[in-house]
Amino acid sequence: MESLAERRMQVVRDHMALECVHDWDAVIATFDHPRYEMYGSGAVFDGEAAVRGYFAASRTPFPDQGNEIIAIAHAGDTVLVEFWLTGTHLGPLRLGERTVEPTGKPFRIRMAASFEFPPGGDRIICERPYYDQFAVLRALELA
Image (cartoon, rainbow, N blue to C red):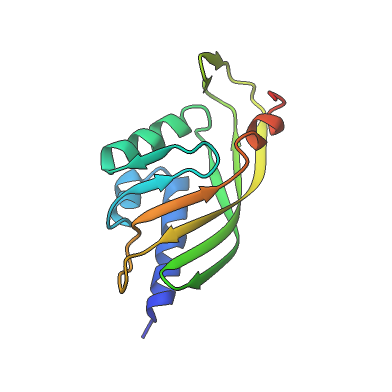
């Protein structure tokens, strides 16, 4: 029988894989309450409508955005993941008041994220990606 820690880590693996194939209904189903707290920009997307909006906005400039897990661990009510975020700038990218047209350039940046779970539960209540918000721009030679 799988332990709670093993189930939680599998939910995170599934969640991340589903993001890569844009199966947004299935991604939403991995949450008890959909919420992203972006530790780079400070943006918070709380609730299903806001999270789906985040998915649409982030995949417009990078429709092939993917991730490759480097390491995953469980502690308390948290699953921690280190991963490579990858993608190609294939759509318009909004940077404040300006829009940058597609450059066709790829990026690959190292990130980490915590996935929070309710006590005893195995569905996510918050994902917190930790990243340098300018790393993608540097990789695309835009900063």
